[in-house]
Image (cartoon, rainbow, N blue to C red):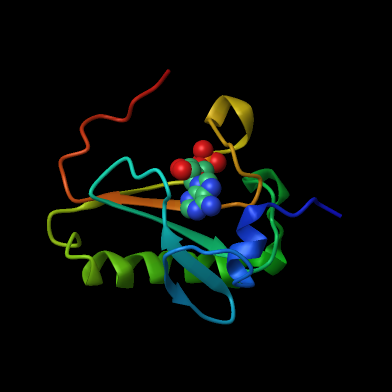
Length: 116
Ligand code: AMP
Protein backbone atom coordinates (compact mmCIF):
# COMPACT_ATOMS: atom_id res chain seq x y z
CA UNK A 1 0.00 0.00 0.00
CA UNK A 2 1.52 3.30 -1.10
CA UNK A 3 1.99 6.06 1.43
CA UNK A 4 -0.41 8.97 1.21
CA UNK A 5 0.88 12.44 0.33
CA UNK A 6 -0.44 15.90 1.04
CA UNK A 7 -2.52 15.56 -2.13
CA UNK A 8 -4.79 12.98 -0.43
CA UNK A 9 -5.54 15.56 2.24
CA UNK A 10 -6.38 18.11 -0.46
CA UNK A 11 -8.80 15.63 -2.08
CA UNK A 12 -10.51 15.06 1.27
CA UNK A 13 -10.52 18.83 1.99
CA UNK A 14 -8.51 18.25 5.16
CA UNK A 15 -6.10 21.03 4.23
CA UNK A 16 -6.62 24.23 2.30
CA UNK A 17 -5.97 24.35 -1.42
CA UNK A 18 -7.40 26.38 -4.27
CA UNK A 19 -9.52 23.57 -5.68
CA UNK A 20 -10.97 24.53 -9.06
CA UNK A 21 -12.64 21.22 -9.95
CA UNK A 22 -13.61 17.93 -8.33
CA UNK A 23 -15.70 14.96 -9.40
CA UNK A 24 -15.88 11.27 -8.54
CA UNK A 25 -12.57 10.49 -10.27
CA UNK A 26 -10.30 13.54 -10.23
CA UNK A 27 -9.48 16.75 -8.37
CA UNK A 28 -7.80 19.89 -9.77
CA UNK A 29 -6.22 22.74 -7.84
CA UNK A 30 -3.78 25.61 -8.31
CA UNK A 31 -0.11 24.82 -7.82
CA UNK A 32 1.17 26.49 -4.65
CA UNK A 33 4.37 27.54 -6.48
CA UNK A 34 3.12 28.53 -9.94
CA UNK A 35 5.68 28.39 -12.75
CA UNK A 36 3.33 30.12 -15.23
CA UNK A 37 0.34 32.51 -15.03
CA UNK A 38 -1.88 29.42 -15.14
CA UNK A 39 -0.48 26.42 -13.26
CA UNK A 40 -2.98 23.77 -12.23
CA UNK A 41 -2.47 20.23 -10.97
CA UNK A 42 -4.98 17.57 -11.97
CA UNK A 43 -4.85 14.38 -9.92
CA UNK A 44 -6.79 11.12 -9.65
CA UNK A 45 -8.75 10.76 -6.41
CA UNK A 46 -7.24 7.31 -6.02
CA UNK A 47 -3.60 7.20 -4.96
CA UNK A 48 -1.34 6.17 -7.85
CA UNK A 49 2.24 7.12 -6.84
CA UNK A 50 3.89 7.32 -10.28
CA UNK A 51 3.28 6.51 -13.95
CA UNK A 52 5.16 3.26 -13.24
CA UNK A 53 2.26 2.23 -10.98
CA UNK A 54 -0.48 2.78 -13.57
CA UNK A 55 -2.72 -0.23 -14.27
CA UNK A 56 -5.54 -0.81 -16.75
CA UNK A 57 -8.08 -0.20 -13.96
CA UNK A 58 -6.83 3.41 -13.77
CA UNK A 59 -7.56 4.24 -17.40
CA UNK A 60 -10.90 5.90 -16.67
CA UNK A 61 -9.40 8.29 -14.11
CA UNK A 62 -6.35 9.01 -16.29
CA UNK A 63 -8.57 9.73 -19.27
CA UNK A 64 -10.73 11.99 -17.12
CA UNK A 65 -7.60 13.96 -16.19
CA UNK A 66 -7.20 14.89 -19.86
CA UNK A 67 -10.83 15.83 -20.47
CA UNK A 68 -10.74 17.95 -17.29
CA UNK A 69 -7.48 19.56 -18.49
CA UNK A 70 -9.23 20.53 -21.72
CA UNK A 71 -12.21 21.99 -19.84
CA UNK A 72 -10.05 23.93 -17.37
CA UNK A 73 -7.74 25.25 -20.10
CA UNK A 74 -10.81 26.76 -21.75
CA UNK A 75 -12.13 28.18 -18.47
CA UNK A 76 -8.72 29.68 -17.64
CA UNK A 77 -8.59 31.31 -21.08
CA UNK A 78 -5.48 29.52 -22.35
CA UNK A 79 -7.02 26.98 -24.74
CA UNK A 80 -6.67 29.11 -27.86
CA UNK A 81 -3.05 30.23 -27.35
CA UNK A 82 -2.05 26.83 -26.02
CA UNK A 83 -0.61 25.24 -22.95
CA UNK A 84 1.53 22.33 -21.79
CA UNK A 85 0.58 19.16 -19.92
CA UNK A 86 3.37 17.43 -17.97
CA UNK A 87 3.60 14.33 -15.77
CA UNK A 88 6.94 13.90 -14.01
CA UNK A 89 8.03 10.39 -12.99
CA UNK A 90 10.50 9.56 -10.22
CA UNK A 91 13.73 11.40 -9.46
CA UNK A 92 15.14 11.82 -12.98
CA UNK A 93 11.74 13.13 -14.08
CA UNK A 94 11.78 15.67 -11.26
CA UNK A 95 8.84 14.19 -9.35
CA UNK A 96 8.50 15.60 -5.83
CA UNK A 97 5.04 14.46 -4.77
CA UNK A 98 4.35 10.74 -5.12
CA UNK A 99 0.69 11.00 -6.09
CA UNK A 100 0.52 11.12 -9.87
CA UNK A 101 -0.37 14.61 -11.14
CA UNK A 102 -0.81 16.32 -14.46
CA UNK A 103 0.61 19.86 -14.58
CA UNK A 104 -1.39 22.25 -16.77
CA UNK A 105 0.81 25.25 -17.58
CA UNK A 106 -0.15 28.21 -19.71
CA UNK A 107 -0.76 31.92 -19.97
CA UNK A 108 2.60 32.77 -21.59
CA UNK A 109 4.86 31.28 -24.26
CA UNK A 110 6.53 28.38 -22.44
CA UNK A 111 9.45 27.97 -24.81
CA UNK A 112 11.22 24.71 -25.47
CA UNK A 113 11.01 21.97 -22.85
CA UNK A 114 13.73 22.62 -20.30
CA UNK A 115 15.92 19.60 -19.64
CA UNK A 116 18.38 19.56 -16.76
P1 AMP B 1 6.30 17.42 -9.19
O1 AMP B 1 7.66 18.05 -9.11
O2 AMP B 1 5.90 17.06 -10.60
O3 AMP B 1 6.11 16.29 -8.22
O4 AMP B 1 5.30 18.57 -8.80
C1 AMP B 1 4.80 18.75 -7.50
C2 AMP B 1 4.09 20.07 -7.51
O5 AMP B 1 3.22 20.12 -6.39
C3 AMP B 1 5.02 21.28 -7.42
O6 AMP B 1 4.83 22.10 -8.56
C4 AMP B 1 4.59 21.96 -6.11
O7 AMP B 1 4.65 23.36 -6.20
C5 AMP B 1 3.17 21.45 -5.94
N1 AMP B 1 2.67 21.40 -4.58
C6 AMP B 1 3.26 20.83 -3.50
N2 AMP B 1 2.49 20.96 -2.40
C7 AMP B 1 1.36 21.63 -2.80
C8 AMP B 1 0.18 22.06 -2.14
N3 AMP B 1 0.00 21.85 -0.83
N4 AMP B 1 -0.76 22.71 -2.87
C9 AMP B 1 -0.57 22.94 -4.18
N5 AMP B 1 0.51 22.55 -4.87
C10 AMP B 1 1.48 21.90 -4.20
